[in-house]
Image (cartoon, rainbow, N blue to C red; front, side, top):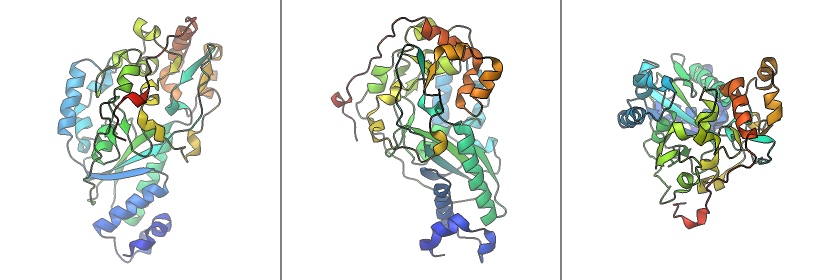
Amino acid sequence: MMLGLNMKFAEHSTSTDLDSIPSTSDLTELIRQRACFEGFDKVGIVRCERLDEEGRRLAEWLSRGFHGEMSWMQRDVEKRTSPIEIFPNARSIIVVALNYFTPTKHQNTPNTGKVSRYAWGDDYHDVVSKKLHALLQWIKEVVPEAEGKVCVDIQPIMDKAWAVRAGLGWLGKHTNVITPEFGSWVFIGELLLNLELTYDTDRIEDHCGTCTLCIDACPTDAITEPYVLDSNRCISYATIELRTPDLPKTIEENLSGWLYGCDICQDVCPWNRFEQRTSETRFEPRGGNVDAVLTDVLGLSADEYAQRFRGSAMKRAKLSGLKRNAVALMSKVERPKSKVQSPTTYDVKL
């Protein structure tokens, strides 16, 4: 098959356009191109296998209680380390990254609460999932016996580990995946396939160097050591996942204006100077999702909450959680300063 015409083929073809099923290498390249056509910014393809080393690190992290009250993380550990437990016929994993950066800035006003950048637009679960399902449908048209399973954060699969294995980026000291092209402003998803493909074997080396900006900037010292995050100390965990009626004192006293989530460790990362605006319009900020007026949040009824945050990742915190966070912010007359330092004093391998 002449690969010079592959992009046109990837856009329009079905199995009826082919005299025969493509070879493994050609099919792999066509899938990669089709994934880009669907809008993904990075694509890696790896063999489906157990994550033994990553599984050991996960077990240690759980044993230290760093998952906080996210008890669901202790369930299905075997599934997290072995994707065939999720999809028994899996042979290959297509790992994708989708840039979500938009250049809007926070207002940083006392009457508003900051929202993490990932939740400014439409819910990434829906956006990434639709793109992966479209990719799977296309693969089935080319290879009728193809079967697959789409995974976008909800399924018990180690997204970051697979992104690193697929060569999309490296795991930063703040525990987010960093890509050379887009920094850490990317969503990750996987498509488990029952097809044997040609696999990527090159990984991107760790380019964090001696930089500790993310560690030093965290106002609650949640990054206990490079590459290790204690959720119990994390503002994002507390404002999104924690279901207690009140925030822990150490969190409440160091919210730094955050209502939902926290981007401090990513905002200071030198690699995020290379951010590029996303081409996905559904990630453009919704009204009130960059900075939420605190009195508006406190005044929301259940119906108003459901309507306002329909199709938004912010619904993860529940209405009670958003109101709890708003109360905590309004109780502070003056916000503490986060421990941000200049990146120019660090040796970062750019």
